[in-house]
Length: 224
Image 1 (cartoon, rainbow, N blue to C red):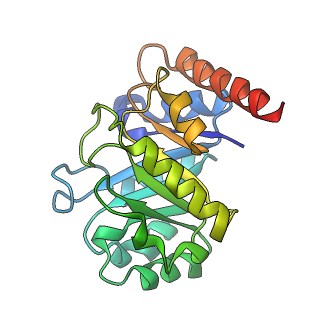
Image 2 (cartoon, one colour):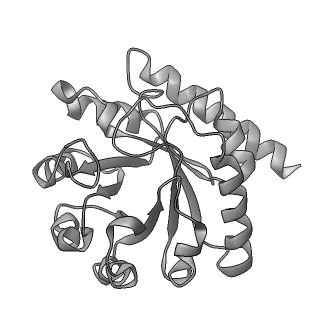
């Protein structure tokens, strides 16, 4: 099943509860929550108090994307805030396998993230232990960037690797995904789509329905 994960970083924080309820009413089941430390990436974003506050008003599945140095330090705290999944960068973990284990020990789903220039070889000894692999399709740290075309081939290569070694793993993509290119990443093998500015805004409901229509048409096409 293909899932849309609106990136809360693009939401209107002055009316965050309403934004969460709106996407949920539109049939969205998962939310992408970016946490940035200003070190691993240039920007600084929300943290634990905001995640906990969102959990109190939403039943969405929270995928918390830790764009921070040594994310293992925060696994328990993020779990205590009500996250359902944690996404950690291979580049930010000194001991990636240990960090993945920490996540799984809390009962959350584990996701490993690769930046555009990071090779799939980083997954060799953790692919059996993760639920999802997130491929960044832009360089992380800022919203509104353009999708990097070379990432389409990388998605295809990851899909082939997963089919060989652990077919249950999801492929998530994040960065520059819009209505005019989402079909490309679906055809390459992605099944979890993070989108921020192309979802939230003046026409949030219409944007979600447009994504869902593409997903449904693609599912029907693949089925037959």
